[in-house]
Length: 251
Image 1 (cartoon, one colour):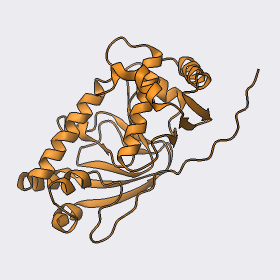
Image 2 (cartoon, one colour):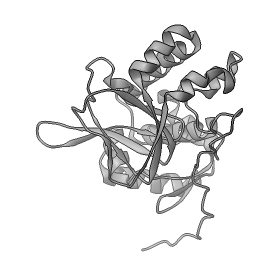
Image 3 (cartoon, rainbow, N blue to C red):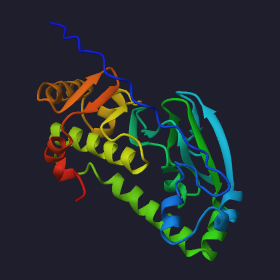
Image 4 (cartoon, rainbow, N blue to C red):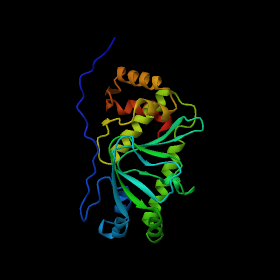
């Protein structure tokens, strides 16, 4: 039996507001930390000079590849990106998904080359920061240095998020709540968004079978937790999802 859902209202795709001479871009990866200690855009002119706007990268295009020399980190301005690596048997492992305002490339600092691929999931734009120049600036501006350390710590925490023995429902619920909170942090809707990643990519990331992801989403829909049509998703009961995924979510 095929169940056809009533069409959902399309969510607004996150698009960066480039700001102006005084205001930061709406998806700036550093603005929250800088504003918190009293720095505005004029005070961070040096940081702004390190930024190069790059893109567009179309869906499926590489932002960087495994083994490329590490010279810069990339802050997503618009679109979404996945990072992944391929094992010796040629199997892809999805490491993470990145939204506007988030930074990719931090895991390349130690090996001095990128240990994974970064691939656009939809048309994507970036702020590219020269890492040697940013490191020199961070040495003089504690707020920049502290924020870099915080981003690196968050990256390490995300890498261990899915460790342990958790059910498919717990993993999926935590994934959806995490996406919701990350969108909300940047001022976008936390209950209505577009899943730019495929079910196969979600399954790979959550270490589940693609069929399991489809079954869990169908179950969540029948329970009234979500509404979904294709890749358009609405969280009907965020609190219910959080309760299911609480073992994998930060307090």
